[in-house]
Amino acid sequence: MRKVLNYIMSEHRFTHLNEQGLAKMVDVSDKVETARLAVAQARVCMNEQTWGAVREGRMKKGDVLAVAQVAGVMAAKNTAQWIPMCHPIPISGVDLQFHTETPCLIIIEATVKTKSVTGVEMEALTAVSAAALTVYDMCKSADKGITIEQVMLLRKHGGKSGDFVRENS
Image (cartoon, rainbow, N blue to C red):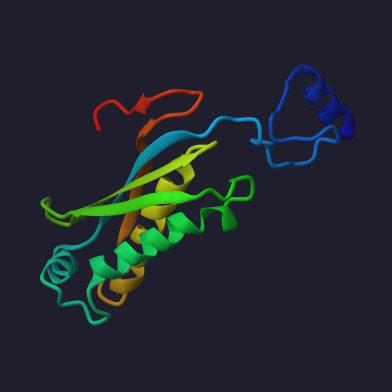
């Protein structure tokens, strides 16, 4: 196993592995602070009765979307505690939007901003994931068939790799 790892490391330069082939956090101390933004999305599908109860505020556990909003903000702020190689960064803003126009579907969108040396893609993805899981938790007594789908980065701005915009988003 070590021979294979040494061969792979000699042929490729992995940014998150040290000289021994062990995981490391990349040093970003020489990077320049820039304004950065990331927008992510998750979709939560449920049955019509549950969807109606969420929209009308009739779920037994309370206001599903208000609790999911707080969960998403908290998750974005704590991303580095969950993702091992993610840097803790100062977040300057987090906003979650919930779209429920389509029957049986809640679309969650998170926008995260910072002025830092590294991006906030993971924070936006973590925010929508936590919000979607919170919707499931708040609704599971009514509908255990809820699905969480298509967690994805929609767009990002800033940083060395430049801008990204997902097509058809």
